[in-house]
Amino acid sequence: MTCEESRRFLTGYVDGELDLVHSLEIEDHLRGCAPCTDMVKRDRTLHSAMSLNNLKFAAPESLRRNVEAAVANAFPEEARSTKPTVMEFPRRERSWQWAFAAAAMFLFAVLAWKLVPQRQPVFDSASDEFVSNHIRSLLPGHLADVESTDQHTVKPWFNGKLDFSPPVQNFEAQGFPLIAGRLEYVDHKPAAALVYQRRKHYITEFVTNARGEKDAAETHSSQQGYNVIAWTRDSLHFWVVSDVNLTDLEDFAHLLRNEAPSQPSKQ
Amino acid sequence: MPHLDAAYNLARWLVRNPQDAEDLAQEAMLRAVRFFSGFRGGDPRSWLLTIVRHTCYSWLTRNRAAELAEAFDEEAHSATTSEASVNAAGSSQYYSSPEAQVIAQSEAGRLRRGLDSLPVVFREAVVLRELEGMSYKEIAEISGVSIGTVMSRIARGRERLREALGAPPPPLVVTEAPAKAAANKGPMP
Image 1 (tube, each protein chain N blue to C red):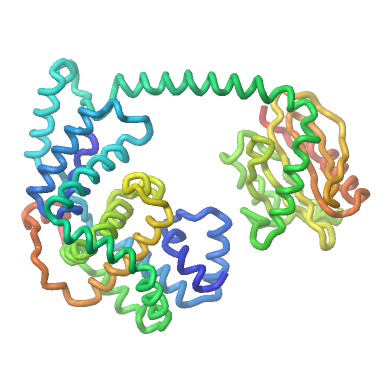
Image 2: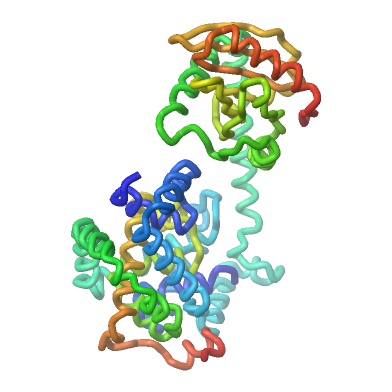
């Protein structure tokens, strides 16, 4: 990232408004750029000066009284009943919520009905998406949200980001070092993506929740020169995608399958 | 009466005058109550502040059209200006640490005057971010602009604020009720 690019995002970085990928790129740039680091310091200094000095204006008492009186006038029965005021939106908000909930359930039912028949050959329909995702991740700077070879760093990083806990191991001894993890959204679900390396190649392992689905044996496919192996186990779907040769990828898949059961997955 | 402080605070910063701010905040609160059926869920404070902002901008258009036009005009040109200031910023003595100390030690009065001197669109973005602690997304919704615009307004606003603080306080008419200001900021050194 150049200075010019970084300047455009620095404010967002200071405010914690950037996505992880951009934040990491900025941090990377900051390590080697004193003027940009200075800009960050300046923004932080200003921010702390502004929060140390309370600059907010509190509503004057006269305004509070006037508004309360006016509201009581407009809604005599609500004002008399209890203290909770109109601005807390007691009843009406609830009715909106119910309307939304009903609409959402209807939509969900329709979608579920439409999607179920297509989802039977789940691996084939999705593997295209996984291959694309794997390729996109290889574009510069997109590989990792959390970069670490330590499974004890990568695994907790997923806490609270997914509704399941993906098994994470580092197979460095077997020639497949773990290098990073990131969050994805594939096959209409949030997914853990774990990146392993095999010599000069990258392997992406995707894990998604398969609650309520039976274990399924490995299926192989190949697209655009990338091999894909998929299986279902312990209520989790696994996909491994890479351009390494199929033998290596199968070895890797076997490693995962042998190790995975030791890690309990959340139902 | 939740969010009344937030409503008044925004109005106060947008029109920079206690009496008008009070009138406008009240008008906005009543509008919010009356048009509550337009509330589509989400954060009630954001929704209320959207109404406050709208009420204040209508007032500004009627009473201070020139100031409003100037602010938007300045924003339109700020792309090039901020580029220039970014480059000037590259020379390191511009960011010397004494300047940072000056800002850190600025008391509330100077910060207020500095913020008051900003064009309204930048002031609004900085106030919503720094004083109300809102996310870029919420600010974008309240101000009716893109998140990218919010980010550049905040960046530019902070830059302008620092310029204002680095220089001696500008000789502008401060329409601030001193008693109220003192009550809000608490004990100051």
